[in-house]
Image (tube, rainbow, N blue to C red):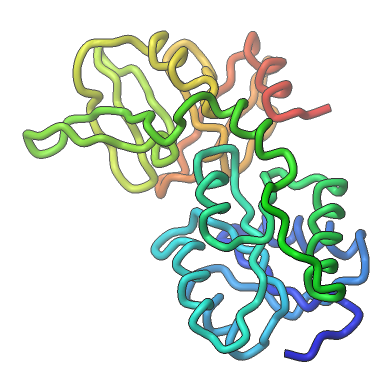
Amino acid sequence: MKHTSSLRCLLVDDELPALDELSYLLSEVGDVDIAGTAQSATQALEKIESLRPEVVFQDIHMPGASGFHVLEQAMLLSDPPLFVFATAYDQYAIRAFEENAVDYLLKPVSRERLSKCLDRLRCQLRQHCAAPTAQPGLEALLRGMGLNPGLVRISVEHGGRVLLLGHAEVVLIRTEERRMVVFTRDAQYVHHGPGTLDRLEEKLAPLSFFRANRAELVNLAQIRDFAPWFNGKYLLRMRDQAATEITVSKARVRAFRDQLDLA
């Protein structure tokens, strides 16, 4: 692969707004050539072969095959690109370090963090720097996610059995008629066993879950977008297939903005 002065990049994300935002940030940082974009694993693999990027900024959680599948297949090429995994605040950030990624970016991506990431990439590609053994901010990331985040499971009823869902699979949890309903991107389940939404909130709060109102607990990593609503409330639209809308109560709006670090 021929290296030029600019980093030749492919951007992969199933959400068009996320692609636009990362493209804009990269254009501001400069010295980056965006060779193309892709919105699925299949498109990503096709463009990696045809465009031969030096770097792939790869979203991890996409419908169908994940970003890890893209990396696994790309590693079979004679001259594979470097990968930077982009992910929301969940356990996927941890697995990224076990999959030959040069770096990770937590969404929403900051200019400062992106600039450091690009410095790391240029060092490896242009100056033949050795890959560092520790990623920047990893210890803080682990602390923020709580102990053993990969072991957190949410039990639901499914076909007469108890199904254990990873917390990152859950879009929202809602109380309905004295029961709790757990929503994933493409299904709904009744929560198994005793418990209350308050107890689940306590358990899941370190893992990016937020109590939007008295009856609904949402995964911040699964919010597609949001907008101000009447009486000082917010209206969230989630990433499930139904694009479920959730109201953030007026009393919770300030906490919601603080959670997302919004000015």
